[in-house]
Amino acid sequence: MEAASASASAGSVTFYDFLDRMRNPASLDLVRSIKSFIVSFSFNAANPENDGKKVQEFYLTMEAAIREHPLWAGATHEEHDSAMEGLEKPS
Image (cartoon, rainbow, N blue to C red; front, side, top):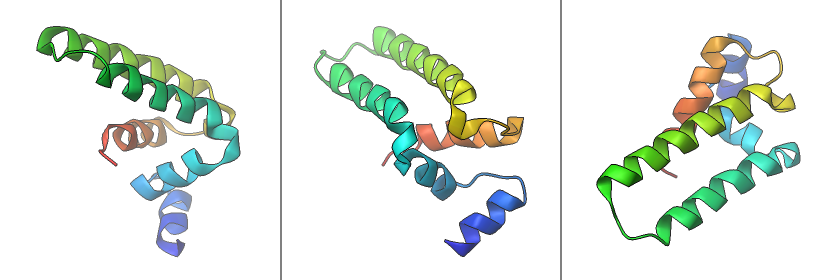
């Protein structure tokens, strides 16, 4: 993880930095929100119009939650953007 640490100290958060923060026990509330969304989303029949709206609402909710979360305190705008990009990546 040296490369991830080096990039974090340089001011950018890589996808692996995002994953490391999400593995921190303090991020349990964020992880639960993500898992809850995935489970609830998978139970509904596909509806492209509504699905897009639900994903955007979830994304906005998570963006606010990450910005306010203690693990992201003091993070730069770029680091928050990188975190949101990490959230969008398929696992």
